[in-house]
Amino acid sequence: MPTGRVPDVVSKEAATDASVTCFLNVLAAALPLLHENETLKLVQLQGFVQSAPDFYEQPSVIDGASTLAVQLLEENGKHARVAVGVNALPKNAPVEISCTFLVVPSKIRFLGRYRWFDKKSLK
Image (spheres, rainbow, N blue to C red):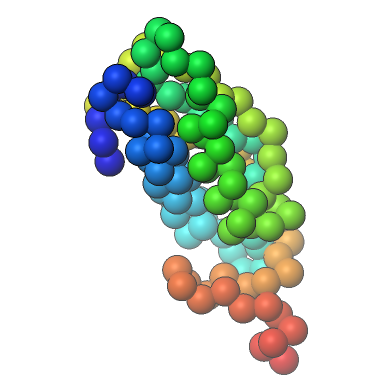
């Protein structure tokens, strides 16, 4: 992941890609905590962008994470969102993502990192 302020050191596009990586990391931390027949519903996504004082496009940087959430979680990926510009982030990261999930009954079963199955297809 790149380091530094957006857009002075890190381009807006690279920061958007970093928001995608951050969301994948949050999702990877949450998924193993689920029990059988449970899935996640994203309630809120908070995005923090280390920004130059004259940069006002924080929402478009966090769009990368929001778009991926809806692509991966479908209806359960629709969420409330906050996108904030900050002066600094830990380890000089350009983006930080925080998510609030709700655990809900699953219509699909998670069988590992690369295997999602619709319950109908398992019968």
